[in-house]
Image (tube, rainbow, N blue to C red; front, side, top):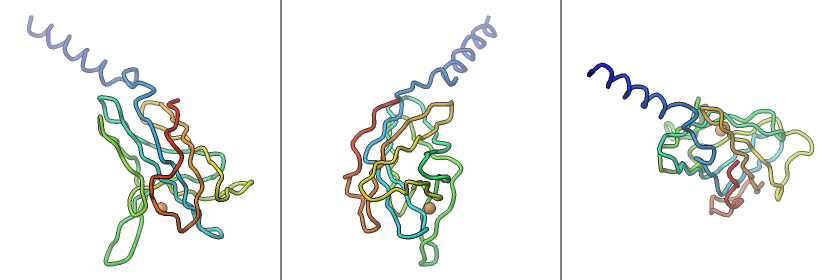
Length: 159
Ligand SMILES: [Cu+2]
């Protein structure tokens, strides 16, 4: 009797954790922008991600036809000098937000393809989440001296 109840409970728990339980509109994005650096220096993408769902969303990768390489990075200061590292994934906790911003998490963009993105362009970067969901987010290209003042592209449509 108890055993049967336990089984039923386990079944529910599995259902709740399955990819099917991950609504396509769980994550929204706003203020997407790219800081363009001169020459062949990599550009950086910043965005604010909101997880409206009851489960954590995990950003595993990002892709765009405008850059051959898009990596998840985090900046930090070690022994007084700025450094950055790749991160395998970024979790956005349930009902919370994650800000990719200068000095912290960012998308590192390398290998720009023609036409080379320039200030004022809007580059669409698709964010891929654990469970197979994808979100296409517009990023406004801004100059090297741009600050994170929240003036990036307004909220992206959930896809
Ligand atoms: Cu970086």
